[in-house]
Image (cartoon, rainbow, N blue to C red; front, side, top):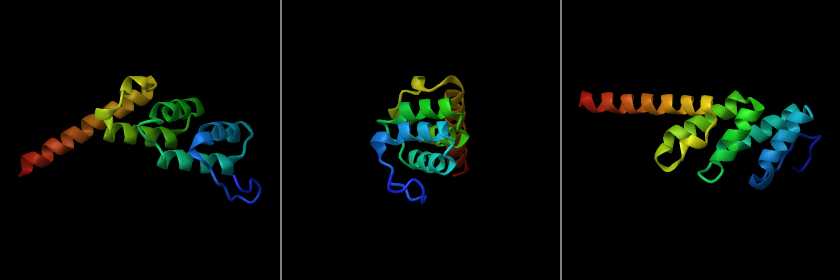
Length: 109
């Protein structure tokens, strides 16, 4: 974080989850938003579980949506059992929709 008061942040992956939690706890909305945006664009196979857990703990619908999107896109390589129940169900529903859409596209040709 370069300047917490000026709104210019340098968020790094190794502390983004903890920083996001602290920002929410301290009611630092701008920093909390910046952390969540960073996490949304930085979901990987390695941090998927932790970001999903943080999204659930923080009740962040935007972050949960990003986790669900990533899970639906990469479900073959991920263990979806690590997701909290509601987030897992949302991800499974997206996978099913994607599979139906793919099937419908292939039937048109």
